[in-house]
Length: 188
Image 1 (cartoon, one colour):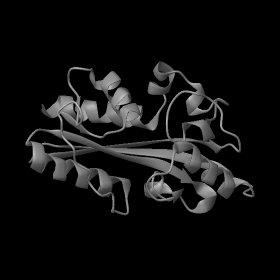
Image 2: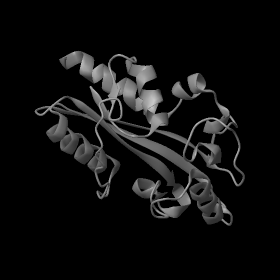
Image 3: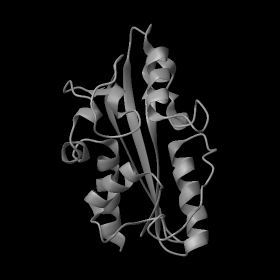
Image 4: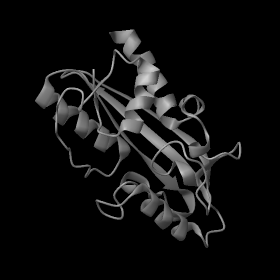
């Protein structure tokens, strides 16, 4: 299966769940394609990516869309998590913008949502999951990627303070991938 991402962090997470031999990245196949994420839901973006990539490769595809949803900001940034500041911004710049938007909020609760879509040209299988936590006002941790340093779990650790094995057991991508793997095992 092809995993429709160029994000090495997402690829590592999914390979550890499905097994390194079962998932191949776009880069590993020499495919250079970017699908515009212009849908208004995580499912919409993941489904669009899976179907468009399938047209190019003709192989089963797993596509992902995920993001941070801050409750007091009506789910912002949501599907725009990685692009609300426009392209070319670093994770640190995006995290600083998230912190600035949350500084004066009384409620800093948030969730991380991940939607995975498998598409093989006929069947579309969807698995979604979320984890809850809070936005913190100072980045912590060196592991992970994206907003991991500003998303604190109920355990008191940020996603970036967990090693990859710990994160893989509690991330929304992990839970969505486990659901997807179960569904795929039933039909494949």
